[in-house]
Image (tube, rainbow, N blue to C red; front, side, top):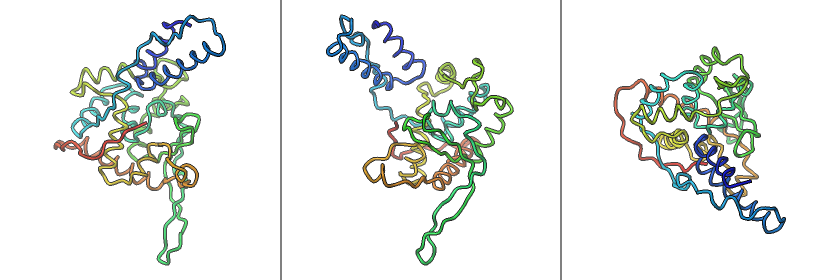
Length: 286
């Protein structure tokens, strides 16, 4: 193992996957492993090969970029010029706020139409009453999520319409976002399209992760409760109560919030008016 080998791995994560922060975390972990090996195991290396590899400055800067409504409209119109499944991939990221890699691995089998869900309503006499409702649900298996727990995302009618149209293109594959180059594999990178967005639109600083931050911030601006936003993003619950005692999955609240967001996006992309940039709290995302 040489520093060149380590550099190639880190560069792939940083530049190919646009994951500079993760590349720095991987670098730190690899460095600790080598340091332990050199001191305690006696591996046959003169020095830690990570020592000569650089830290990616892009991964250490706290980014707070969100897109205003004019930019959302411009992005949507640009995505309409790209081929499938990349076109729908970007749109689903904007409409759901999910992580890019978790979205790439979406399978048709992960989507259940009219799933029977339950919510609790409080009756006039104060008693909890269990009510049933239906929702189109995308379930991300725990092995595919950053948090290592199953995540259910209610899909709005707008998302389902996009997926129905995409199914005529990729429906023979198990993956919703089937790679156009590698058979029976999902998309693994949209770097070239992201670069073209930066070159061909006014959003020269475009990044995929900004879509997730934009969704979270716009939901907060629309007065969606913070805990519902956290559930939509599948963020890790903090504290003993959140981790061990709160098991309500908020499906009904997530459905309401994402439906509201889809309607707002629809209004944005069909409107000619300008809306000032949001002054809502900007979410720091994981």
